Image 1 (tube, rainbow, N blue to C red):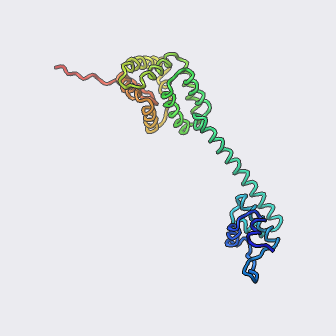
Image 2: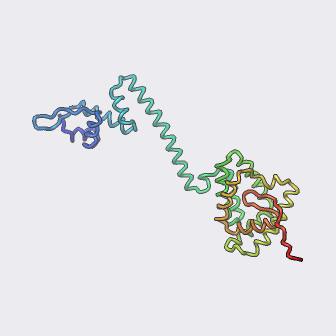
Image 3: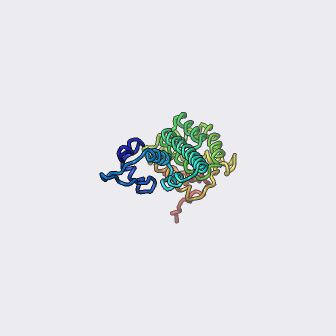
Length: 263
């Protein structure tokens, strides 16, 4: 006959666990002997090992009691069901591990591969990292909102990126990152307005304004971009004076009329 400590040792659990299983009604408590100690037999060891095995497999204790009382076929079916559940949990944990690995990879955490490739292309072309980050944050929102349209949008972006003039615009903006009053922003606004107008006349305004998303999301994406690239806000103000506006959603607008202070 075994003491509670010996029982726990043979079954590979703690004495506290044995008492917990007693309290839950999973392991019967034997009567105390004449010395006041509870004594356990070999059957208790076997039963405790079964309880421990099921509990370690993640079976809720309420279900453990049910399984311990089940017949052979019912027990085998229940174990098979537990095995299926555990396999599903393993697959889920594997997906979690993959997401953690992607987290270490940076851009690929929340972006589809084609967008990651586009951002890598920007970096390879020497575009300043703050501008790349502004692009990345916008794409994260776009990919979450309209994932089915990402291939279409990214194809358009890649096509535009082949124009050396657009690369020059990116580079000038990068050079002006430290100052929102950089005079180069005025020159850039002039050049961009001409570029956008020519592109709209040649390809149609739908080609220029191809991001048909709701206004609140546009404002959110613009705010993210301006937080990362502060000169962008000033650039958009300058563009509006030249008939265009918008960072995320580019639109043609009527330029403000000069005030007439004459007689």
